[in-house]
Length: 335
Image (cartoon, rainbow, N blue to C red; front, side, top):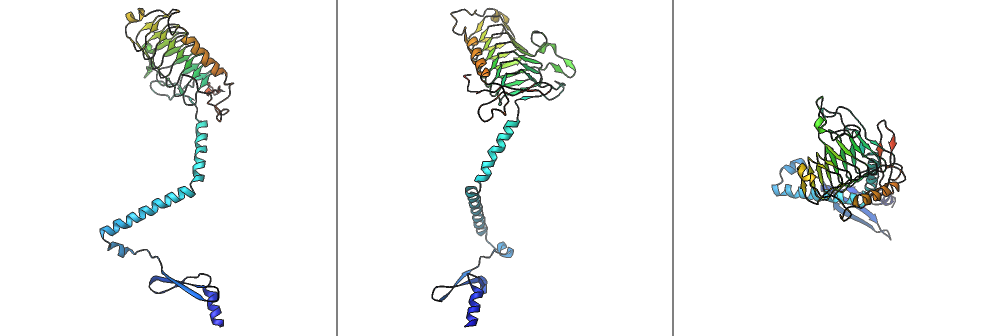
């Protein structure tokens, strides 16, 4: 009797007892003292010599089984254990977005050997999704919208005045003003207290998706419509370039308008453009647009992109010398 009790203590509860031919036994005792024994085959990985003897179809089947097992393991891990990892990833992305600045220095090259950081006046709004790079001056109460690119990598300097609005998706660039040690005079717009590859005066509106390629000067109070293209041209004060118009190589006189979708490619065409009067449908569009965006920028209350990262996009700028300046506001403007 003692031997049986000792044997029972050695094999319970649920101990495996190796058996012949790769089997195993699991003895169990149930109520009443009855002992049961379960026998089953132990799983054994095939030996290399055995695998070499498998047929082509057997190898394919084994590979499919392994692939299904791997997919199942990945799914189980993602379903039951991957949520913690996924919850961490957005936080890291948020910190990276906060660290990025839309206002940056240019890279020195043969076309622009001097490294400059844009000078953005206090209170100006530069959307976090914009890109403003190089020797650029931006005035107060100015709005730079989402996905706007103001690029002075080659053509520089550039000036954007006060109370200007550059709306989403607009691209402003210029021909090189310096090439391998030589200043390219033809790449500058008409002088405005200095030479500029692109000069945009005060209270100018540039609507969504416009393209401006310097040398260009856009004088005070002008309005550039959605998708308009201006290259190597001067737009006079208070003039209106309607949506989709193309203006290249001419000087549009002050107070004129270019009809939507039309092309002005000669100075004769520019001189014959119709004048803006009280009956003109877009006579007040520029002033109304400037007032709207000035109010939007003013509502920001200043601050930095980090200050309002959880509530609204913010303007972020940096003057040459590293003084951080900014103004934040919602970007839900009607562009």
